[in-house]
Length: 284
Image (cartoon, rainbow, N blue to C red; front, side):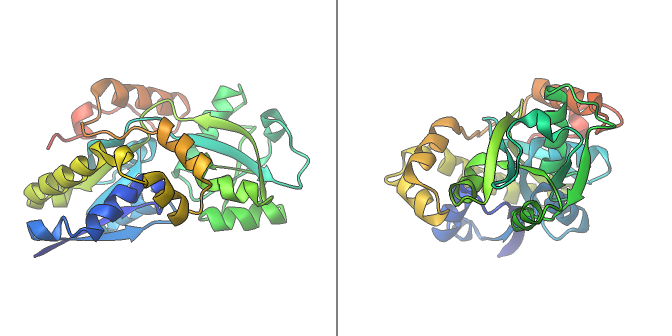
C-alpha cells in the first residue's frame, strides 16, 4: 500500500477529506492517504511541498500560483472550492478602529510572507486605493492563535482570515470584524508536487475521483450542518450561511481564471511575471 501525504488547513472546507479518510475510501484502493493539518496556512504548505514533506496540498489559489512562479516544483491539478473565500478584516475588540480606512499605514498581522493573509492585505489595500509601498506594514504571527495574541497585545493592528473560521473569536469578544474582503477568484485548489505527478499520477487520479464523488453530494449529507457546527465550534446559523455560500468543484481551473489571478498579482507587484497556463496547471 502506497503512502501519500496531503496537507490542508484544519477548517470546514476540508471536512469531505476527513469523512472519506474515516470511511477508509483510499485504503480500499490500496492508498494510505495521510492528512497533515497546516495551521500556518498556505505559506506553510508551500514550504512543505518544496521540501517534499507532502505530496499534495489543498491550498489557496493565489498563494500556490505565486509560489510556483517563485520556483515551487508543483502544479495545480484541480479547483477544489470554486466560490470565493470571504476574508474578515479583524481588529482587537477593545481597539478604537471602526473603519477599514483607519487601518491605512497600520500593521497587518500575517501568518508568513507569501501566505493568504499576506496577499489579501494587498488586495484589501488595492480595493481601498492605498499606496502599496507606504500604507502596508506587516508583522509575522504564524497562525490564528498568534494573531489573537498579536492583536490583543498590540504587536499588530489588523488581521485578515476566513470570516466563518474567526466568527467564534468575534462572538467571544476577542476580535472585532470591521469589514470583509472576498477573493475575486475560486478560493481553493488542489496542487501536487512535480515528483509525485511524474511517478504516481494514477494514484492521484484515484484520490481525485474519491474526493470529487464526496464533494458532489457534500451539502446534501444528512445533518451535515450540525456536524460542522459541533466539529468546528460554529453556531448552526453561521454554518448554514456558510454552506449556502460555498460551492465545491470537480473540474480543473480555467485558463481565464489563471490569467485573471496573475493579472491582479502582477499589478500588485506580488509576482514578477505572468506565466503560461501549462507552467502552472496540469490536466490529470
